[in-house]
Length: 377
Ligand SMILES: Nc1ncnc2c1ncn2[C@@H]1O[C@H](COP(=O)(O)OP(=O)(O)OP(=O)(O)O)[C@@H](O)[C@H]1O
Ligand SMILES: [Mg+2]
Picture 1: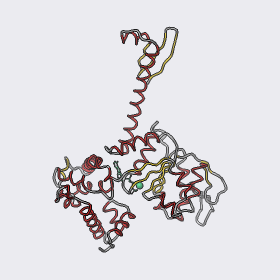
Picture 2: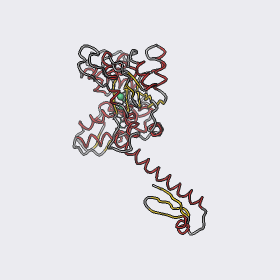
Picture 3: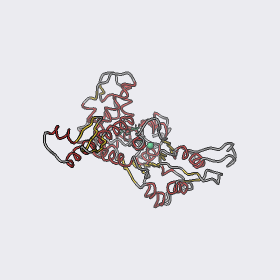
Picture 4: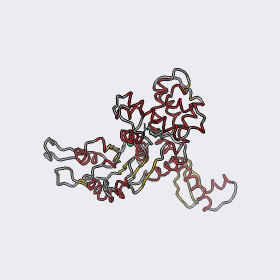
């Protein structure tokens, strides 16, 4: 890093612990240059040092979150992540299930928090649909002893735990309408009252929301408050589905392959060319999560050093026809078969079948309706 001071003999600059004077720069360059030029050169050195540190921080965050990408779309997203990380503006992350919304939220938090590890700021995550609507308000905003039957002690709530850090509201589209005004107030005035309390609590937290629903059409249908919608999406980051950023498929596959091979103590070197082609042409309705599950299963099943098509039944039939012929209808058939097999294997249990193929319950229900499938198809 650079610092500078001036005395009667001219300017002194310190770059990376080495002291330079304008005089020494003259000698180094072997020419006479004026102070402005020297200042410009040193400023450039300073800028380069700054960029190096910043790049190192970004790489650390990416490595920590194991965010893998190569596509232009994801490079643009990471550029935005870097810009928004240091400011407290609310962010809405949209994208299909399994596309990496939570990972991006973590990257924003970690990058905004990379100053030091001793004073890590909290990252509090709430999965809105996972908490019964009747409990969500108290879980979020806490309650005072005696607020309702069973409230035997004070409870702080998740929002207060996020003070000074980040509150990540996953699947915000599932936030019940009756709680939405309270969240709006938190966003606008940074305060709220716990249940049963008249004391106003003020907190400073960054709020990141995510959704795989179309909030705009929910607003039109009266299912989501318009004012809240505009407040949470001051900045929107949309993560495209994996099929729209195919350059990421192979780097992600290789990453998952080495991760699971290492975890399972297997020495698997790579994918056959057929597997690579099939990975690239499949549509990945469950996005990165589905890809991760497929590779994990392939590593479990693989008996040899490389992954072949027989280790990935989902892709096996796809490779049988030439790449150009893997059309929409073929993919639909494959998807239908995958869902039917999963439902059969899990005895019609939607949650288990969704987990099996690496998609959410809602996505599975939607796709069952689309293909006219029943639990016992
Ligand atoms: N770019 C990526 N690099 C590495 N792993 C990724 C990437 N994107 C997603 N994943 C992995 O895919 C899985 C799903 O990601 P994540 O939970 O962030 O998705 P999501 O969009 O929040 O899904 P949902 O809508 O179902 O909650 C996780 O295991 C995550 O680690
Ligand atoms: Mg998520």
